View 1 (cartoon, helix red, strand yellow):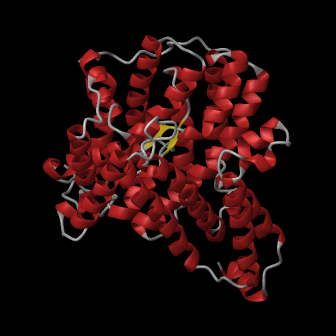
View 2 (spheres, one colour):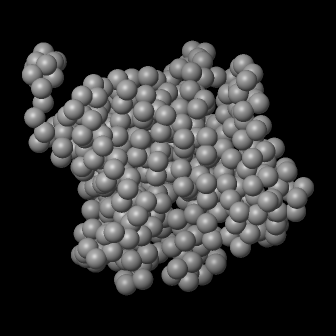
Length: 439
């Protein structure tokens, strides 16, 4: 029997009455982000409403299943860290382009091949480790935080594209969530640990009282429905495979950043080779399973990295209860719909805090490095160009489509490329060379 553990320790069993709310807290942090990519792509391709609903249901099931693999590895696959998996928004641009030209089946076929590629990359993470020194991973974590902040603010205002975006109701709900979180963070124990969950629950209740929630979708959803694999036939197109393969290489970088963010922010250390390799391989396996269920690629969720950084809750058993809850959502469309109709401003209040804490975690990691002239240049150029281009993607509009698809999605990949190249080519001072030789 597993020994009793603390929520602040990786291993050990936590009482269910404490673990379940904290696990659901993780699900709430990623729920909207998990279904949004499918809603966007299915809407663009004008897919049947019944098929779209089935794919969203599958997305819940797959996210929970692959999260379990990250928590409790199968052989070399899985990081054994509190990583929550979900449908990646990083693939939206590429999926939209492939879907518009070749159809949804081509997206899934390319995802299947790309997933195998990422599994191979995960296997070779150790020899590639020199590409991920602390100076680089710190900048990737900072870039993840900076790239997510606009997402959090859009949630705060009610969601990008919402007709009432920025309305007083949305701002009131988001601000209330922030205030409630701040209040409960002043307590100790369970109230402190579950402050994000309490804030979201209070915000949801307030939104209902303000008449901001339409429960029609909940009423029309079935209580029980099984996830269905192979709902869309695969098509294999070489151009689609190449485009998606490049994105899988790019998302490997983001996953390394997420893993580093969790170990830095939650465990106060750098990730091991085994954790990086297992985490990336689980990304690949998750995306392969997702393709079989007709879902877009699954990757580690940066939203939950922020939650770990805020709460310091890293216990795998706690996150496991959240993974099981996700799986239950995959079998109970009505439960899934209950979260789907939640106004985005409810999550926005919590998201602003969580995403900013990812940035703080990256800054803390970076502060452990010597910011001499050489490293200062790496930081300046990586953040300046990486984050800058991420905020002004139009600057790449005249470049080939594959360049803008990769580097204009967000600043994470550009930050990594610049930091890695500069770290490899800029000469190191003699003291740093001696330290590396000793290590």
